Length: 311
Image 1 (cartoon, rainbow, N blue to C red):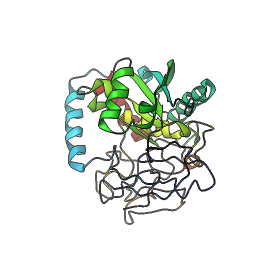
Image 2 (cartoon, rainbow, N blue to C red):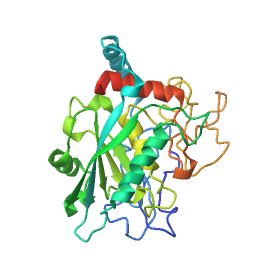
Image 3 (cartoon, rainbow, N blue to C red):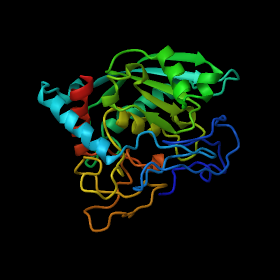
Image 4 (cartoon, rainbow, N blue to C red):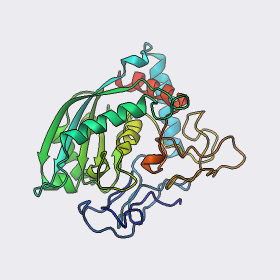
């Protein structure tokens, strides 16, 4: 198991929250403690976790599941007409879920900054000449505000997630619902191939403190939402499958055995294969300032998944 992307140690001097996996149910403003996460696979599905929580990383799947989805996607694409990448215009409904004391009631300016960050990241603007322009664009359609302590503090259990989402979800498969909550994860997402079975659950949940300017040191540039939107668009973690031949099904993301914590230049967990670990990729677990790219292969996969499941 790789070291979790945890905010316990990271936030000794800041307010805590964490994880593309798990934080405790208490408010981000609670005093940080130590944390661990139960990994879903030996390859290093360590989650960005906050103190006291033990849970499987929601967006880590088995290679058997990866193969089954790949076969399904290929079959669906064979019966679909091609879609232009420029047609991937995503309407965003941003749900601000906050506590009765006002915790989590993020400002409109923070929401606008979050959408701008996502558009910058998906357009490849952080690393011109290296990062791919996926051509997926996000437009803020509406902001909904919900004062509800139960929804705010328990969006992670099956019952809590269902209660929140079924009461508030809007739009269709092309609409991205973002719920800003006190999730014990930094964030989690649904994959596009899950939409048909549970359309009302479709979207991403993010820790309110991860928005641009939020209180989570190293994770407050808004890139958690870009990471989770990557899952929503059809991408796996770069460390999916570890050093296996197929790993994340994207040829130009080098194989990676373990998730990244921090921004360790030169990290190479699959020696003997081509390339260093893609620590700057939005689909790893690096610090926000370390992120700067999606690859052309990931852009191609995003378009394929959109065509197969969301167009």
